[in-house]
Amino acid sequence: MSDIPPPGARVSPSTARNRDPILEVLKPRLPASGLVLEIAAGAGEHAVHCAAALPRLQWRPTDPDPEALASIAAWREHAALPNLLPPLRLDAADPDGWPVESADAVVNINMLHISPWSAAQGLMAGAARVLPSGGLLFLYGPYLEPDVTTAPSNLAFDTSLRRRNPAWGLRRLDDVTTLAAAHSLVLTERIAMPANNLSLVFRRA
Image (tube, rainbow, N blue to C red; front, side, top):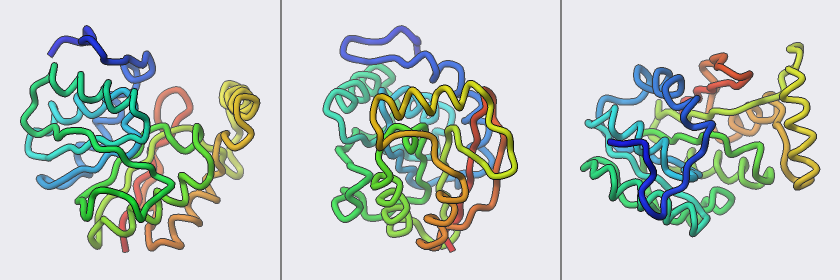
């Protein structure tokens, strides 16, 4: 598949940089087969990249934004991957309204810092509902950690986000893990990633 975007598709420069490192973390941790539910899939580039590399998994991208859904659909048509399912409208902050009843894994990339805390709350509640015992919740993005010096670039990013929207900003890792634990989602791995990001692996108890 060409990386040249088809008509109607959006591109994110950061995706081209982080998609391979993310995939390398996901490969040994996702189930051999089953359904992966991607929350806040954005432009859809990660969905295409992961579905192409993991043909035994069904990949279901979702997003609340109509323009994002149109972009995902354009990338999906362009890629013509049989395991990449049509995108669904899903608002992470409304877990009772999720259009998916069950999934073998949930993937969420770069959402928590550009959404209100209610999206994190909904993500944890929804993931706990759809995942089986032992099921994977994967989060990727920048976080603030206790006893870890925050990179100046992340501090500047946090400031710029809060100027754009006071409800946005980098989340404290302790707050995220506490919220997850309240929904029986246990942090099992913290993996340092390029550009001062983290991959967080949770398992449903």
